[in-house]
Length: 103
Image (tube, rainbow, N blue to C red; front, side, top):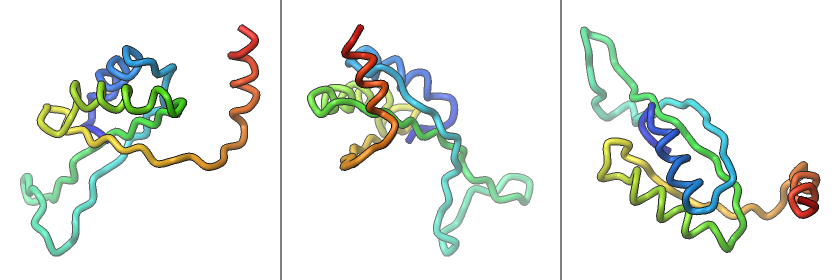
């Protein structure tokens, strides 16, 4: 997850580390209502975010995560957070995997 406008930078880093592609979801950071949010002209502003979803082989995952973190991590303007939840099952990817193996 990164600040809005940094998804291409994330994907450039991920592709350089072996990712084939990804999907970008636009989102909004929601804070606990008991905490103060940024106020602009009397309106509360929630920072827009982009979530980049990348599915990779287990062998490439760590390299992709490190590349993204180095380019777009929390200490950068992107303020990116990189996580890797395991995928136990997925439907619909088999056809893509079979096509990739044939080429």
